[in-house]
Image (cartoon, rainbow, N blue to C red; front, side, top):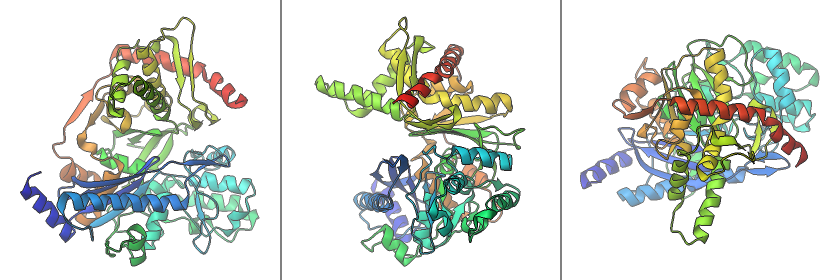
Length: 535
C-alpha cells in the first residue's frame, strides 16, 4: 500500500468515515473495519468453540464477552500497525451472530438457563406441534420451538421470562440498551408477516391461546424483541457499551448501530444475494442455502424454513446442522501424518492437496459412503449424530475417492433439501453464489456443489471477509442510505458494481455421480440411525 493510500485511510479512520462489523460465528468471532469505499481496511478475530454440557450445545456468556473484546482488541491492533492511529470511533457499527437458538432473560436481565444454540436438536415435539398449529414449518432450532419445548418439559424458568433474544440481539441490547432485532434474524425466532415486516399477529395469538392455561404473566409478543428492517438506525453505543467492548476506554460512545442480524442474512448481503431469484450457499460448521423467493411456497415442507432477507423479503432456507467439520477433522489427521513423516506442509497446503485429489475420484465415489453428522440433522430425522465412514468390499478405496466422498457428504443433506425447493416447488434461480471455507480451494467444492444442485455456481472475491463484512455493509447502509433506497439497490450500485465472478456449470458426469451417491446416502441412513442408537 502506497503512502498516499495509507494517509487517506488514516484520515477516514480519524474522522469516523468507516463502518465496523463484528460477527460471532460458530468457531470464530471476527471483526472487519471498512473504509469509504466499503472495502475492508482492517480485521481482527478471536477463536472459540461451543461446549456440549448436559447434552446441550452452548457457549457461556463469559466466552461471548471475552471473544468480543478479543476480536475488537485484535482489530484495534491491526489499525494501529497498518495506519499508526488509535481507533477511537467509527462511522457506524453492527453485530451479527449465529441465528436462532434460545436466550431467555429475567427482569434483572440475567440469563435464566445456559444459551441453547442452533445446533441443538432437542425440540422435536415442540417443532412438530407448532408446525401443525401454525401450518407453517417451525424448525427445531428456532427460538419459539425452544420456548415451547421448555414449556412442554415443565421447566421452572419459563414463568420468570421477561425477554427472549438471539445472540446478536443480546449483544446489541447490552451495547445500546435497545431490545431490537433485524428482521432476518427475527424470522428465526418466530414467523414474520412479510406484508407488515413484523411477527405474524395471528400466529402470536394462536400461541398465547395454546399456553393460556399455564398461568404465565407474559404474552409472547411482549417478550420478543422489536423487529427492524435494514437501513433503519437501531440505537447508539452507550458509555457502558463502549466499555464492555473496549475496556481500555479508547473507544468513544455515540456510534450509531444498524439492526443486529443473523449470519444467514449477512451472508446474503456479503454475496449480493438479496434480490429475488438469487441465492447463496454458505459452508462452514453448518451448511445452508438461502433462496430469495418471488412468491410463497405452494405447501409446507419440513426441509425448508421460510425466513427473510435483512430487508424483509421472503426467503426459503435449507439449513443443515452439519457442514465441513468432519471433513476438516480428516484433513487434520492427514496433516498430522504428514508432519510425522517430516513433511513441511502447512494447513493450507494439506487442504489444497487433498481437495484436488478428490477431482481424480470416480464420479460416484465407487461404493464409498460417509456421514458428516457430528450433531443431529432434522432434514434426515436424526436427533443426534455419529460421524461414520463405510465402504463395500468391492469399492475402490483410493485417496481420491475417500476425499471425494467426504466432500460429497458435506453437500448431500443440502442436496436433499434443495431438491424439494427446485423440483417439488419449481423455484427458479438466476444466480447461485457459494462462499465459506469449503470453497477456498478453487474449483473443487464449487464444481461438486454445481453437480449436487444441477445449477451453475459462482464464486469470487466479492464476499470479502464474509459475514463480518456483510454486517459492516448493513451498518454502512444506515450511514449512507438516501430516502427510498432499497438494500438491493445499495449493494448493486455502491458495493458490487463491476465485481468479478467465476462460474462453473454442472458437469453431466458429476451430476450423475452425485445422484448415485445421494441414493446410497439415503439408503444407508439406517446405518447412521443404528450408530446413534447403540453408541
